[in-house]
Image (cartoon, rainbow, N blue to C red; front, side, top):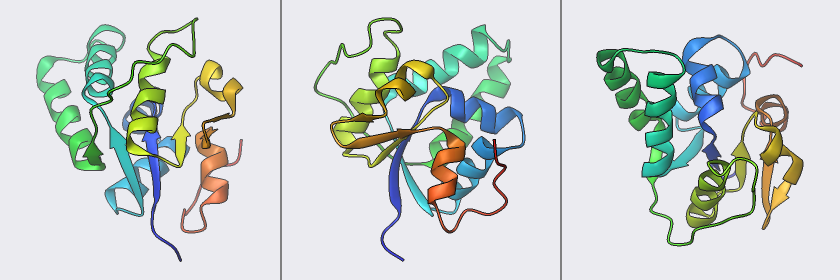
Length: 145
């Protein structure tokens, strides 16, 4: 088996993994075991905090715990130097691409249709959690669908 895959997780995958069992949670387990290396950026971490607060109405105490868990899952934080404007419909999606370019990630794992429509960006494969797990021989119990 080669070195761990390097990935950037879109915020929707992290939140889904935190809140519900399924493929996103399996990906978070792989990150916790360092079977995959997760890269992130301060802007992605901020988006996570904002969504947990504004969309899911989590308290500051719970968000602090979730962010601490997130930081344990992240192998390395990167600080993107280039600002991209590839996706016009949802500007926040560009932050995912920026982190992936800066970290030289192999994969972006997302449920976001605008990113998924790209399929590939500068050699970085953009996959749903299910697709990523089906390519990962060491993933256990992933759910088809």
